[in-house]
Image (cartoon, rainbow, N blue to C red; front, side, top):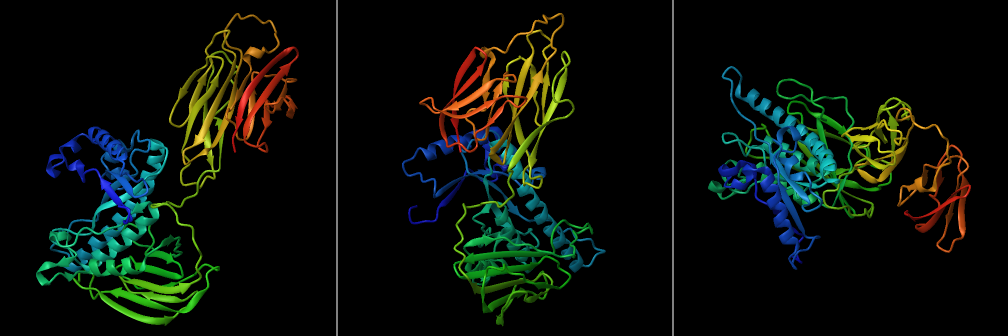
Length: 526
C-alpha cells in the first residue's frame, strides 16, 4: 500500500440487484447502509488503515436522482463522514430494437444520439446528487463509476461507443468522478479486446490507451462557446454542447482533447488559450476517426503541426482530436481527488415573508433565507432557532421557519433565528423577531429591562455580537481578561456591536443599564 497510489474498497457492487446479484443484503437499502458503516468502522480501526491511500465506497445506482430508485439517498442519509465515495453506474447501454422500416444505419445513428443524451442526463445527475449530498451529509463526496462501458449484447466493441465512453469519463472527472476505468478487458459484450484474434484491441482499448498516456496531471477548466445545437434520438434539442473539450496539464506538458458529439456534421473549432500561458510553436496532433461509427477499428492520423493561439481545427463527424504541446509550467497547486470546482456562497440573509415582528396576540409569521451569490452552485440553507426567551411556538420547515406568539402574558420577548449556507458552513447569519402584545387582560405596568433577561449571541462570534432584551441607553463594553476596556458602545435602536477587527481569543462583555450590570464571557473566532 505504501508504494501504491491507493485503493478503492467498494462494499459490494450493484447490491440493489439483491439475490439476482448474489447480494441479498441489497434487498434492504437501510440494512446495506448500516452494514457499510459497520465495515468502515472496522477498517478504520486497523493499524494498517491509511486515510490518504484508502477510499471507502458505497455501492449506489445511477448518477441521476430520478434513476437511482432511492438507493443513493438511503446510503447517504445520516452519513457523517464514515464513507468517502459513492459508486454509481457508468453503463451507457441502450437498446437496438430495429424498426424494419428504418435502415439499419439510421437506427444505429439514433442509438448514438440517445447515448449522448444519456451522458448529458447523467452529468446533470452528478450535480443534483451533489446538492443532495450537501443536504443529507453536510458535504460533497466523490463518485466512482463502476461498469463503465457503452455496449449491448448484440451491438458492442464499436468505434462510436468508444468515442461516447471516452467523452463521458473525461466529462465526469469535472464533476467529482475519480479513478475513471473501463469495464472490462476480455469478457462477453463488455470486452475491449478480441480473445479470438490474439486479443486484438478494439477502439475503446486503443483510444483509452492514448488518453491514459497523454491526459495526465491537472484537469483544467474548459469552456465551449457555440451557437450550434445537438439533438437526441427523437429530435429534442439537448442542453449539451455538440463539442466536448477536455484539457490536462503536467508540468510543461499540455494536452487538449476535442470530441465531436455530432455524428452527422463536421465542425471547425478555434482554440482560445489563456493569455498567461506561453506555448511552443509546434504540437503533435492526433485525429481519431472511422469510416463508420459501427466500425470495430479506429483510424489514427498523427502529425506535427504549427501551433499558436487561436488556431483552427477541423473535427470530422464522430471524431476526436488530441493536441499535445508544451507551455509554461504554471505550478498549479494539486487539488484533492475528485475536487469539484464551483461557485460557493459568500453571504446569507434572513427575511420575513410578510411582517418582521409579531405585534398581534398569537400572530404567526414565516421567515426564509436567501443565499448569495444567486448563481452559487448550491443556494440551499439550514435554518434553526438560536434563542427563544418568550416560549414562542416555532416550527422549522425545510424552506422556512414559522414563529407564532404563544398568547400568554409572559409570551413577550424575542426569537433569534439563524441560517447557515450548506455549501459553506462559515457563511451564517442571525435575525431577531420581536414578540409583543401577547396575552389578554395583562398588567400594563412598565418596568426597566432586567439584567436577568439579557443574553449574548452568537457565541462564538466572528463578526457582530447582539445583546438580547437590551433597550436603548444600555452600555456594552468588551474587555480583555484583565478587565481593560477594548470596545464600548451605548445602544440605540441597534443592539449589535461589531467585533470583526478584533483578534481571535476569549473576551469579557459587560452589559450595564442604570444599576443593572451583567458580565458574559465570549469566544472571538477568525
